[in-house]
Each structure stands twice: as C-alpha cells, then as structure tokens.
Image 1 (cartoon, rainbow, N blue to C red):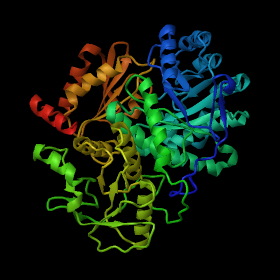
Image 2: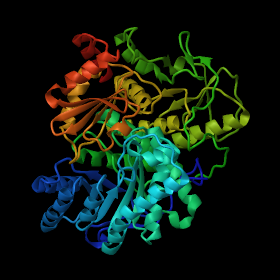
Image 3: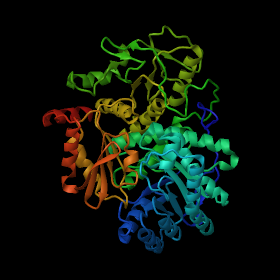
Image 4: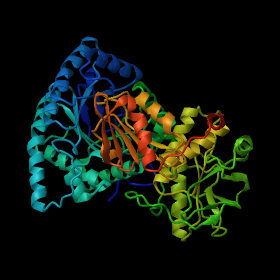
Length: 600
C-alpha cells in the first residue's frame, strides 16, 4: 500500500473534483488541480441569525472560502435558511457547511438550505456508550444495515439537490462498533469513514470529501496516510479529496505549532485539498495561519529532483528510529531511549545561559559548535567516522530539510548504521530574517514532520532569530509532537455554536491556575461531541455538560457532574489534588523572570 509515489520527491495527490455551490457564483471546487481551499467555523449560537451573518462576513473578509456552522438540532438546522438568505441578500455567496453529529433529522433539514453537509460517522445515528461488546459478523452487518437505513436518505437528498458532503471521522468519537472491532486506531478511523463512503457510492453519489481529524498530530498523520493508501488500493475511482485539520489544537503558539506539524506534514506529502486550522481564538485568525502555512509549503518540498532510496521509516505506524545511545555532553546522553535533546548555537547559548538556573526545565542542553557532530551531504556517498558520533546534514545541501533528513536516514539504514541524528529546521538562511510567525510555522513543519516520521534524537532551531524565542520554539515543537513534556499540555477545542461556555475565557482561566504542572495533560471541551474520546489520553477533562454546568473527567471517565461554571475551575484544581498531580507554583516573581527570558 502506498500513499505517495515517493517519500523524497513531491507530487500532489491526484483527486477527483468535488463541487460546493456554484463555482461561477461564489462556490468552490475542492480537489483536482485547484488550489487548497481554506475554511473555518462560526463560534456563535446558530439561532442568532444576525451574529451568524456578521461572523460569516468577517471570515469571508479574512479570506475564508467555506464557512461551517453547527446544527446540533433540527431547530438550528432550520435557521440555516434564515442565515443563508440574509447572506445572499447582502451579496455574500460563500458556501455554507452544516456541521452535523448526532441527529440525521438535523442533517436532512440542513441539506435543504446549505451547499455542504458534514457528518461524523462515529456519531451519526449512533449512541456512543463506550460499551465493551464482541460483535459477531452477523451482528456487525446488522449494525451496518441500520446505519445504511439512517444514512441513505441524506445521500439521496444531497444527490438530488447537488449538495456536497464531508465524511469526517474524529479520533475522539469513533462508534462502539468500530472501537470493538478495530480498536482506537488509525485503521478504525479509516474503516469508519469507508463504511459511510460505500453507502454513498452504492447510491452513485460521489460529491464528497474525507477527513481524519485528531488532536494528536502523529495519529492524524498516520490516519491520513493510511486512508489515502486504502483509497489507492480500492481503485482509481476512489480518488476523493481530503480535508486536513488537527482538532482541539488549542491557542497561541501551541495551537499553531500542533496544526503546522499535522497539516503541514501532510501537505508536504502531497495530501490535502482543503484545510482548517482549529484554534481556540477568534475564527478569522485561523485564516491568517492557513494563508501563512500554505505559502511556505512550496519552499519546503522537493519538486524537481528525482530521488530513489530505501524507505526510511514506516509511514503508517509511528515508531521512533532505533539508534545507539551516545554521550552528548559530560552530563547528558542522546539517542536510544533518551529523550530528544535541544541543541542551540553558541550565540543563542551566550545570550540565554546567564539567566537560566540549574532547576529550569527550558534550557539549552548542548551547544552545536562544541559537539562531536559529523556533517554529511546525503546526496553523495559518505562514510561514518564512528558509531558513537552524532550525524546531521551539512548546511548548503540543495534539498529541502524534510527530504534531506529522510534521505540521510535512508542512507544510514542501508549502511546498517544506528548513529543518532541531529535535526535542523533549516539548511540555509534567507537574505532577511523570517518574521517570527513564519519562522515558527517553517520550523514546526520541518522538524515536526521528521519527528512524526520517528526521525531525530536532537534538534536545532535557527530560523527564529530571537535567542529566547528559538529555545522556547524548540521545546514547544517537542511538546506538540509528543516527544517530551516540559509543561502542562492542553487539548482545547475551537469554539462553535455547540459550546456551552466561553472557551477563550475559560481556557485562559484554567491556564492561569495550572500552567505550572509539568507533565499534566488537561482537556478543555466546549461540549460532549468529541469530549470523552478526544481527551482519552488526557489526565483531566473540563467539559460543558449543559448551559453553565461543567462535568469533570479523569481520563475519559466523568467523575463530577453539573458543577456550576463559577466553581468549576476550583473543583478542577481540587480533582488534580485528589489524584496527587498537584504541586504548588513557583513564586510569581520567578514565573515572570522565566517568561521574560523565553520571550526575549
């Protein structure tokens, strides 16, 4: 099974075109040779027509080409008529996508008024109970028959009205049927989507796209690669476009880094026809990140040079490359099962070292100029000095970073060498420095993609010129890619009309109380749609259960219910204490000093 013709040379995946609305009158075409389509989602109550129209116009002004609106009930779906009508009266013809989860009836209503309907196979016509059950083949097929009965009317209606559809699987909301047959795996996500696609194809309906979203970039990357491989295996007429997104990415730098790793890696693989960057921020900010990310991809891929080499890693299942453990410095080892190390240049070290204490977690772990590192050109033949030597690609090699380090890994594999690899975010420097926002995205895509491939034992970030920022960026990339944990990890969904509290305000409040808890993962979910499943690997969860009421979770188990929102953050802290994960924060003056260090 192959998701791409080459791991070393870029070619965009060839897909059929999916039409959303009238392309001659504001609509878009997804797939084929068309540019990647940018989309986002409203954050307001769908029943608030005026605010929905205003937010849509703001998104369109920012460059959004598809606007998604949640429709959790038939009543919400019916109000899409009023929203769309007012938009058209104001001369706005952007296609509207209805976001459907649990109610087929809402999907049927929404399809009457909007150009596209998104359904989640894990929730559509299914009641998720996290039940453990062994399905016989007969029982499993009976369940599929029930799903077909509920889903076929929507397929026929979309076909009749020329509506598009997204079959959007979420890692956090796989059905009990899929979970018990395939487990919580990329294969389960793919099979969940294919079950619904087969029903659509059975009715000769093909105007749909797929998505495989997860809050974990490594899971997301593996899912999309496996999906494309399965589609290729099924035949050339299964060449449906795909929508890319890292769900519950969060806010600020963390949200941008996590999204860049997941979305950017796949775009560099040639996969992706429409994207959404999901941030716990005002929606127009998502479009700015989409624009910046898409602009970087052509410079980060190898479009012209044909390279043939051994496959350097398993693209469908994450496994860290096996390497030997070496002594990096007098105090630290690298490679093997050691954590991925952070290396800095001498100028960066000289600037930040005087302000770092021995107990600080965010600190340079080695200075590049002091290391015994062998720099090689992987496009030529080379030999390795010794097995205890760190290897990297030398500056000036005329290949993009991802291609160069994949090729280095392939060459070492062919030589039977297990030397640890030092990743760099760039191999050359532009005439003028990148803006910080661009440097962040480029470093996240290049280093993040390689870490998701299982490549890399140490990293060096140089495209960010600020000393403190480059150090912080390196650690944040490692955190976002799941390679090490040096601070609290947050899984926070973007707001939408289903959200039962103000996500931005609450997220800030929770971070203020908990951001000192190194190694603790907290999920902040506006509603129950993806909550328990998406935060299954979180230690604690804060989930909207009803208006102004919060449910608290340990893992994916709800342990406290209907807590008044005004008390919920305090009760979350109490819950963390009960499970012995709480430590007292450092004095405020120390926290301020560290923050100043990392932002200068």
